[in-house]
Image (cartoon, rainbow, N blue to C red):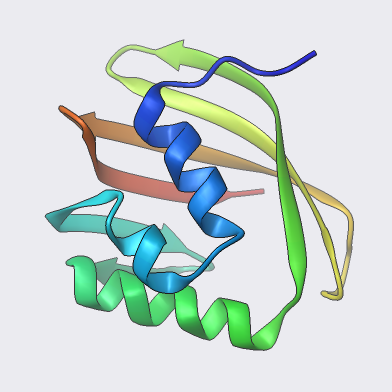
Length: 108
């Protein structure tokens, strides 16, 4: 069964399989991403984060669940690839600002 996601979140997961520019375009100019205990602020920093992750690991991500928690959308996605611990289910907590992502926190 396909998980129903808000349009910009679906765009993010599709872009995640494309390139860093496509990922960064999903975010607001002053957006924040928190991943692996690092914080990235703004589209340029997010683009560098994504490019670095893509250079280090080859992986695919498949959303398997989604739920609303107040003003946030929490998506569980299964990552499979050439990284330690693969496969792993990660929680992506999105805060949206219209048709852009204002914040994203990725946790296990």
